[in-house]
Length: 126
Image (tube, rainbow, N blue to C red; front, side):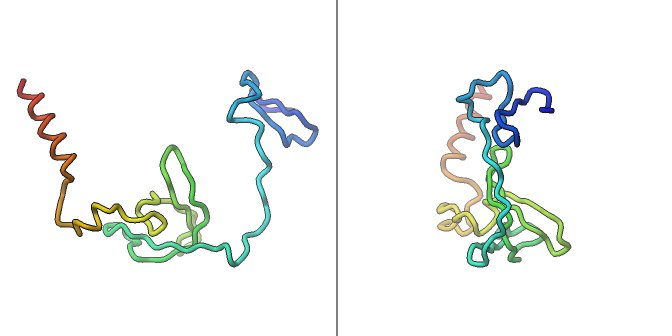
């Protein structure tokens, strides 16, 4: 029996779509998820690079690197085996922002941000 709002086009339920959505909808039909094990040469490791994160400089095995609620996130198992995630920009998976590399922590704000602040302050005075 299909879930409320979902319809299946096949006996095994491999092709499912939302009822009421056109067949060309980006949400359907879905592909079956692979259950094949990851090969050892496909294992990726990453390091947490955010200086204030409690796991800073520790290395973990990547479980998944994906968008979650419009945010690029890295999923991993911590030392206790719990599945955790954090923004990928806090890891070695994403290249460091060129501005941060050049400023080396010496600048608290970018020029664009300071100009925007000046604009907001001028708007507040008028």
